[in-house]
Length: 146
Image (cartoon, rainbow, N blue to C red):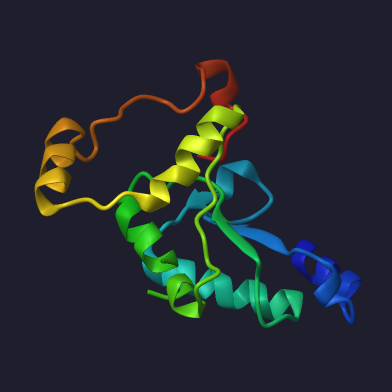
């Protein structure tokens, strides 16, 4: 419903706005009825549904609202990348940071070229699924969709 309202508000003025929307939380307004979905098939269908509700051909910023613990992040990001990267040379990943120096380090990463040996060393040092635990402290977890 919110996307439909936004679509009405920007109708005829699409070129004057930067449009962002998200995917990943599926279900009703009742927090107990919600579930998380990061499957590639859902990423695509959610994007198509957002485009339809917004009444637009493109979304400028499309991001995952909550991590789906049952879908490897590589699969979710992979679905965002077979379509996003094919749209042109002006497609970039957006990363979060709090300090300018970190921002500059992140931007500089575009110039890195990893060899297969580099990637193997990184995979060894940082195995997949090594992170564990809750994203937020227990007192805040009650406010996050399950």
